[in-house]
Image (cartoon, rainbow, N blue to C red; front, side, top):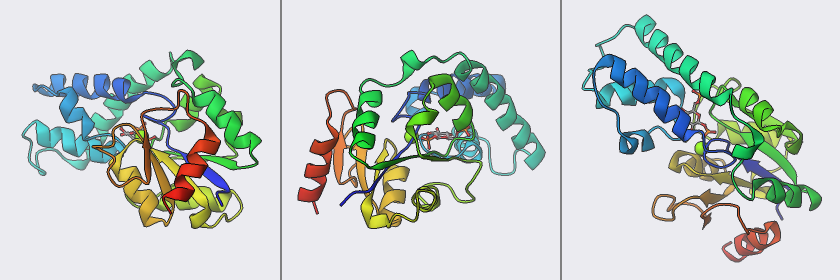
Length: 223
Ligand code: B16
Ligand code: MG
């Protein structure tokens, strides 16, 4: 029986990957190299500092090329550009089918949580007017270990009233997030392509036309 549904933010509720990409690409440009959309795929679900390390590796910079202070400054510079973009977001950018899906989940008596690696989660939820749809929010400011560690999802389950992991389902667009769900003993629904989200219990392309009860039935069949 599923008692809690935990949602990732970027790539599940809203497509902020494009804003992350524009900001990382601008930083790469200032450092004198090109950062492609394919490179950007590697940053999905990964924390800000880990993303910076991947970007610097793509640019051919070795681990010792920059001091800790320089790396912090670069991550902050990127974040300022990113925040400028997401501050302009409106509820129209919520991914198709998401609001009605969340309503169905809640109407079924299932508790809802948002579990994201992003330290900008609060700002984004306010811009989208979505805070009221989640019983709890755990974000990148509240965890020590990033996905694929299950900490963020386990904290969601705890905050929802110690819901056992076996009664939680996680909706995720990143491989690291699907692994985190499995590591925490939770089942998962991948949002995106089955080729990428191979380890998910079930994969959907998005929420448009997707019914909550149908997901529950399909998950119980895959048990
Ligand atoms: P920030 P999620 C993740 O959010 C993004 O997928 C990832 O690309 C980003 O680097 C990370 O948040 C940190 O974001 O710089 O805003 O703290 O997918 O876990 O909701
Ligand atoms: Mg994501």
